Length: 220
Image (tube, rainbow, N blue to C red; front, side, top):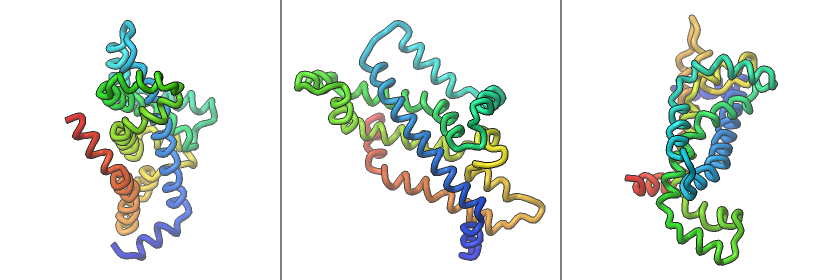
């Protein structure tokens, strides 16, 4: 792949916009999944209530539901809310499907943390918020890294909702790459765009590699 192909890709406004859109909605998706999934996972791991195991199984079943089944109602709802053609809309849909994965991963890691950590922190006078940020999150860094990694991957490569919810604008990089194919496809530009789409994933693995290795080792 010549450098000319990279220059042509980076010079195209619609392709640059697709990269920014993908980075935006993937970041929002990961942030939402961790912010909502961590308290939910803590509640499921530390407190017992009727149907807690069934609830975990139910959200996992929802995660494996084919996206095509829910594509029409989600499009209608998001069109009425004005979230079509917006990276925010894609981020919300991806968070809806990735949140069960984040809860399952974080819940298993929280169970591995001794309850004495909670009790000691509260005896020391920490509030719930202080305990979360000063004790629980540092202890769960490997689990958070694993959950963020899977949420990132699932969101970055997702195509169904990305295509349905971006009719005229806000298209992500996956849709932009598929739109480059035509009767006279510039294979060099397609390959350059594909290589560029791999950069965020490689960077994500690089930044969380230590936590990922520890997280997978802890759950092995």
